[in-house]
Image 1 (cartoon, rainbow, N blue to C red):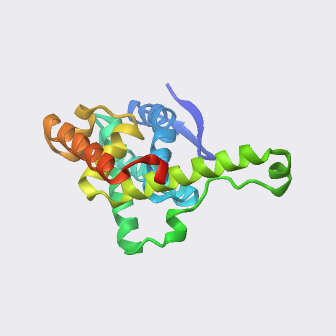
Image 2: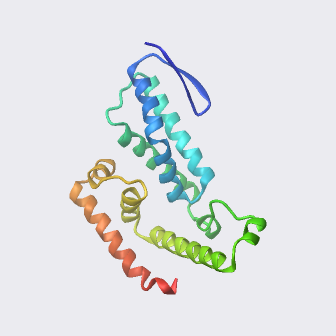
Image 3: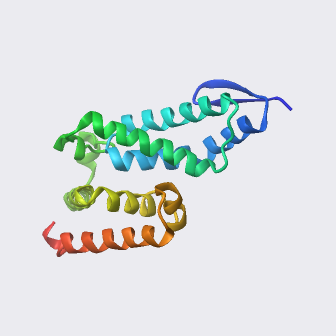
Length: 191
């Protein structure tokens, strides 16, 4: 059966099961892949670019007639390789990129807010930036496992498959990262 679908602005005519699986994978994992890239790169634009590039690479792969056994693992593997390439290109991350904010508030929206609301939002933002900075300072292996677990919502078993390690090793990395974060955070009032 031939089906038509729109993915990222392209009209695709599916002719086989692999292409139908691709469309399902896009619907199931595109948002999660974007969040993963956004958390790792702190740039909405670059995260969107890498998510699209991930699916383009996957599309090229199946168009060559190759099969994908586990789409989630396959897509995260592509995404992680693209993120590594991105880090290599950017060797040093600027402080501005690290502190880049999602949406900014307009002056009119700030005028409506009370002083207490603005202060609370500022404190929340400072805490978010501080935690994000602390996570980025963790050893790469631990940061990656922690991100996959709590940002991407992957299980230790799924993390193990993606990283090519045992499930126990994945759990240890997550536990180690949490312990290190707790140690580095100290009392949260001082953030």
